[in-house]
Image (cartoon, rainbow, N blue to C red; front, side, top):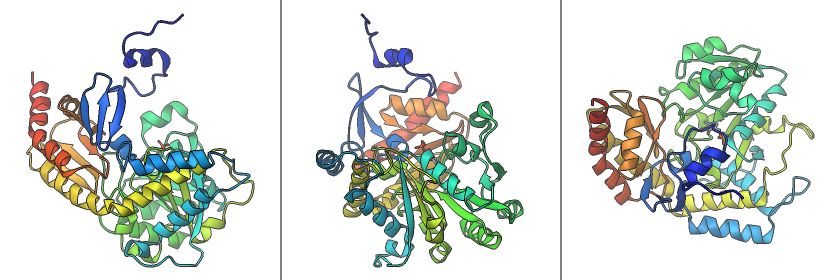
Length: 411
Ligand SMILES: *Cc1c(COP(=O)(O)O)cnc(C)c1O
C-alpha cells in the first residue's frame, strides 16, 4: 500500500524525473487566460503554456473539435490517411503563402509538402533529415538559439549547458552571432546544407534581429545553394500578429524560406508539430526516408484545424497586434525595465538588474504567471484571447511586482 504525501508537488518529487526542477505550481483547471492551482488560487496566465495555448484554456471550439474527431476516428497510423490530415496540410501550405496574409486566393501551384510530428523538436528532426538529403552536411545556426532537446535539434542549439552533457552530437554545425549578416555570410559556403534561424529568438528572451537580417539570410543561402530553414515553432500560428513571423519580412514574400517548422501554438495545447518544406524542398524526402506512428493523427490535426479556424473567426492576429502594443507600452514605462522587445503577443523585456527569477516569483504571488527566460530577461506569451481587463490588471500590478522583487533583493 502506498500512502500519498499531501500535495501534488510532493508526489511529483517522488515520481517524476527531476529534469525541470520543482514545478512552480500544481495547476488543476483553466478557463480562457486563467488557471487555478490545487489550493484554488487563480492566476492570469501570461505564458500560455510557453506560446502554446493561443486559444487559452478550454476553448469550446477546440474541445468540440477534439471530442468529435475522437468519436469519429481517433487514430489510424500512417498506412492510412484521414480528412483532417489532408485538410491541415493544405491549410498550412495556404497560410504559408504570404499572399494569403493579405486575403488573396490560394495559389494552385506546387506550394510544398508537409510532414506532421508530435512536437517541435521532432519537426526539426524531420527538417534536419531533409538537409542531409541535399548531399551536404554542414549547417549554420545562431548563438542563443533554441531548437529542441532531441539529439539532432540539440546539435543545432548553442547553449553549452544543454549540449555538453550529451556530446558528441550529430552534424557539422557552425554557430554565428544572431543578427550579424557579415558573420552569416562568412560562415555559409558551398558545402552548407542549410541555415537555421528563428525569426525572433523565443527561449533567449524574445530577441529581435535587425531589419533585413532574414532577407539577407535568404540571399546568402540562395547564392551558396543552401536551404533556408526558419524555426517558427514558437513564433508561428498568429502569435506575432501574422500567421508566421517571417511574413513581416516583405522580401520573403518573393523568395520564401525552404523549410519552416511549427509546433507550440499549432494544436492549442494538443501535441502536434509540422515540418513544412516549400517548393522543391518538398520532394527531397522519399518513401522510407522518415516516419512516425502518431504524427498526423486525426485528432491532433482536427485540433490544429480548430485552432486556425478560431484565430481567423475571432480575429486573434489583430488582437495580438493591439494587445501586444498595449503591453509593451505599459511595461517599458518603468525605469527598472531597460528594453521591451517583440511582435504581437511574443514579448521580451530586459530588467536593469538580473532579478528575473524574483520578478517571476513576485508576479506569481500577485496572481500573474510569466517566465524568467534568462537572469535579466522576462518573456510573456499569453493566450491570444487575453482580455483587455487582464492585460490592464497586469499593467496596474507591474510597478508593485517590480517593487517587491527589487526591494526584496536589497534586503
Ligand atoms: C519550443 C521550441 C522548440 C522545441 O519544441 P518541443 O515541442 O519542446 O520539442 C524548438 N524550437 C523553438 C524555437 C522552440 O521555441
